[in-house]
Image 1 (cartoon, helix red, strand yellow):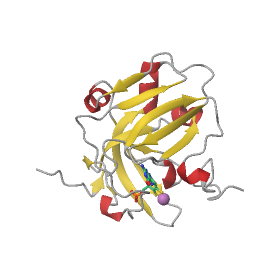
Image 2 (cartoon, helix red, strand yellow):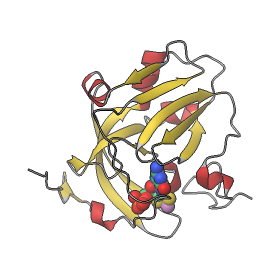
Image 3 (cartoon, protein in one colour):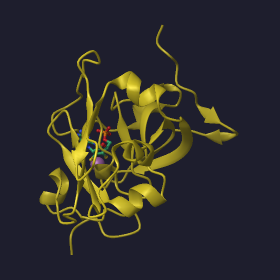
Image 4 (cartoon, helix red, strand yellow):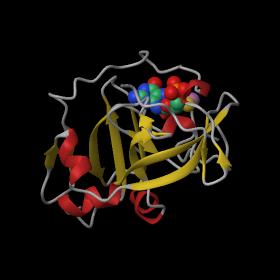
Length: 188
Ligand SMILES: Nc1nc2c(c(=O)[nH]1)N[C@H]1C(S)=C(S)[C@@H](COP(=O)(O)O)O[C@H]1N2
Ligand SMILES: [Mo]
């Protein structure tokens, strides 16, 4: 049976996965979980390819209510459940030269963020939203305090890099590299 989304968490009203405006670059993706791997590589000592179950069963789960704000002017508050990116990074042992994390997705999308932000803000990849499966199944990056274009869905690869100037799909098209909700939408 399909799981039903919860509408409230600890007294706080939540939005719904139906509140998102579907505007992904190639439309919704359907990832075959049997063949799915999450790859972690680049500047790391022990690159690894996880199955979906290995990601979920071998790492501690976290839950957090966080709002996604799209640059188009809408936002949705969701209870996300996932694991911390820094717990995965612990497995692969990043090189001290790494300062940037580049994320790639099934639809060819990509984006990047500073390694410090990922670690210090306890950024997670989510497999559930509102206790029901992810729109970005298997994993969506919960890029708290960043514009929606940093919240990459259908995540397939995490690459550690020493290039802070790597520009993802929307960043190449003029959207701000930092992507902070408090800051500008476009590159200045
Ligand atoms: N793989 C992938 N992830 C993506 C996108 C995309 O096109 N492809 N769009 C981004 C944008 S612009 C937003 S606002 C959020 C939420 O988009 P949605 O409403 O289409 O789910 O997903 C982000 N993650
Ligand atoms: Mo967006």
